[in-house]
Length: 420
Image (cartoon, rainbow, N blue to C red; front, side, top):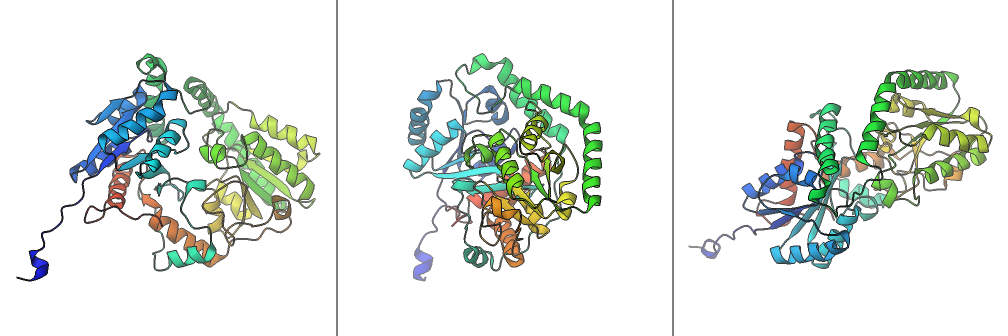
């Protein structure tokens, strides 16, 4: 018998995964089922009744305490239960920030799940967080080196999800929180708007959707036919933590003011600026009026256009470049070799990918991404920071959950290295 044969096989290390708030979908529950099937322990802390509804499995604990007591509670919970890994959506939410801080102090690995950079059927899965918290390299040579040997992403859409399903899940999460708030009386929402106000805004937008789309298409067609050079600025959601926590702006009004002010002072006189509202904006802030006020202030009303609809890819095709705080709309610009200026923190804001100079200089000198670097970026982001699937379809959420489990566990049950 050889020496190697005398050594007993080491059993995979058992881990304890703590889930906090995730997407309003079955994704986290499916991840837990996959991990438990492989012999690991999965726990969840419910901060509100919506969390409880989307967990509904063993291992759940209800936290009904005050927000100021949460940091001590979650730290003690992790110690008491021997937590080895923390999974959550939105690491900048106040409850999550406290949990991440405690986890790092205890050397617990943190994994963040979000909507994918490579829309529509990809899910972001990163260690520690996104944007400012991401481990994605910002150096061109490092991106090229880490992407070497990785395959080209499969851009075929595998999993489709319906807006009606997403809306239904959202209602299932938020309405019980509104009407059964007394079950978790001290819970504080991270959202900026009350759910009922948001739903009212969306209803109004849906009622106006057809006319808004027609007007948008007419504006876009007129601009494209004019032959005038233009830049696209797609707005993000006011509630987006990528804007709230990973940019120099306190809100979207500040970002809009910065872009319009710079455009007015520095863009060539024949250039136009097309600002596109986010398709999921709740309509509670009149962005048209705010933008019009900014444009009027600088005397460029005729050069600034606002649309609520239209095909963003087609607009990017015709544009000189794209300006964004840190929207994933840059993916479409990279594909089309269009210049991009990022104003916040983002994994894609690297020299050679995005414009390295000032916003003021960008308007007159929009330099597109270097094609080999853009291709390497796609390979690396898809290969190590994304999984295939989505949040809201049965097939998509199952595929994403299985891929996340595989990333978390290697063949021997050891910790998986998913980011350098």
